[in-house]
Amino acid sequence: MLRFARPLLAPVMQLRDGLIRNAALHVGRFISPSRFLRERYLAAGFSATHFEVLENGIDMSRFNVPWQPRPAQTPLRVTYLGSLAWQKGVHVLVEAARGISPQALHIRVIGNLQTFPDYVQRLRAIADPDVITFDGAIDNARVAEVLANTDILAVPSLWYENSPVVIQEAHAAGVPVIASRLGALTEKVRDGVDGLLVAPGDVETWREALQELISQPERLAALRAAVPKPLSFSEHLARLQEIYLGGNYSAILTQY
Image (cartoon, rainbow, N blue to C red; front, side, top):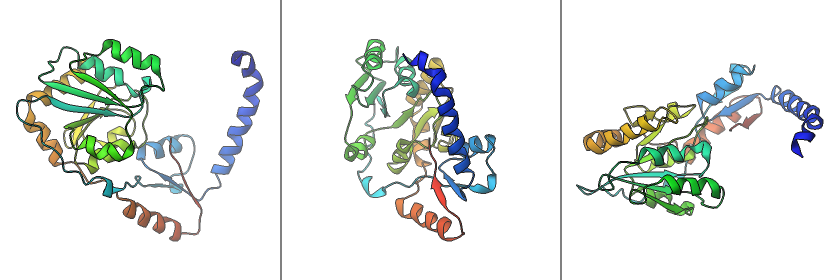
């Protein structure tokens, strides 16, 4: 049905895009949470003078749960926290864990199991149940608790990310991040400093990175020690006030 409707919808969508673009060109300032997003807009013809790069703020008061160090001779604790959808690359992480001993690795996959049930079924089919557990969705109030029992957060995305809040949550909890070398993730994770960047979709490279962290606990400790504190809500608000009050222009927040 949609296939036959496409020719009729095309002019409507073109008009819509034109109206949005025309309105956007009259905005005095855009606020982008990443340099990556800013560059995408500049490539589309927007002026660099219209953009401010400002990371999203986070409620730091939620992250007052002390981190629990991993006891010696216990598995590396890896957490995935987010949507269970193909583009998030969870299957890459699951496949990368195959062949690694449950005495060396435990991965918690946390996310809604009902949104894309076929994809979740695929994940379960390829997962080693001794290594990977599917915990379902959790309340936001429990994120700090989960991260307090995590050695490293995994963000194996296969498409562009702008500014995933989960990375800021990990940083608020002092947890390093292993992420795809893709889009704005390369800004949010400093490879070899406070986390690792890995080729997106490359199962073998992800497996090697996991094995490296397992075999070099001192490396993980060094990454953790370098995790930066994210921007707080109050710091974000102060910067927004500077932007709004510091010039005679309007501002809008832009985000994928």
